[in-house]
Length: 320
Image 1 (cartoon, one colour):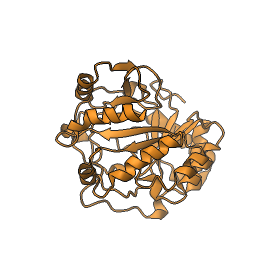
Image 2 (spheres, rainbow, N blue to C red):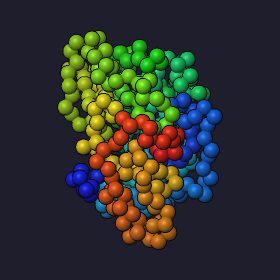
Image 3 (cartoon, rainbow, N blue to C red):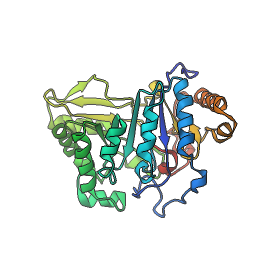
């Protein structure tokens, strides 16, 4: 389906829970967040109804997110059911990897098309510091397990001054060695990170260029996201850059988001959205019409540079 600016909207991120087993400091406040009652969280059947309606509108690619999606029981069964919906081309997942090893075979059997694994440091002490309670070894193992199952794997790294900027070339080496994509992401004024603490993607790229003189632009399609990729001629791995603060990609944005409580968000930047709950109670045609309404509401671009207009929200509440 086209939005009012002529962009093709064919991708939906679906948050299935607000809960997470980590406490990343840029995602939520130090004291944590108040958990939403399960009675207010969409059931899997409701999510599948939304997916069927979305697929009927030409949205054929879905990403399952949280919080941390693997803390909700039955996640693999949901993915299996999503893959069976007529018209669905791709189902992927974003995870912190802490619980992935226990279900990786189920995910592969269910037909999961790809994994994005969040990892902001390759050093154990730093990883625990930023996540609050995570174990780096489990996430590194999750990367290897996913690769061994033939699941397309990407690592997401949020760049932060004074924290991991000295690991940028280490992450590049990790990408080239493992033959996977590592994507460096600029901090946005969503969640509880401060964009002023972020490292511009162009600076990160120059650091990698200085270490790897043969780096070339990779024109191959790596997925549905806005990352710009670079690689070495003899490596399957690549480094990607998602730079919303310094290189807006709103003109090619192809996505909407479904929160765990049933709100369709046309843009990550703004509070505005469409509550699907009344439509779910009415019928499937009402769900379809509500999704269409949300797509028509999609703005031309974000206003992340006007930070005072962006209200801090835990990323676990909106699914990233």
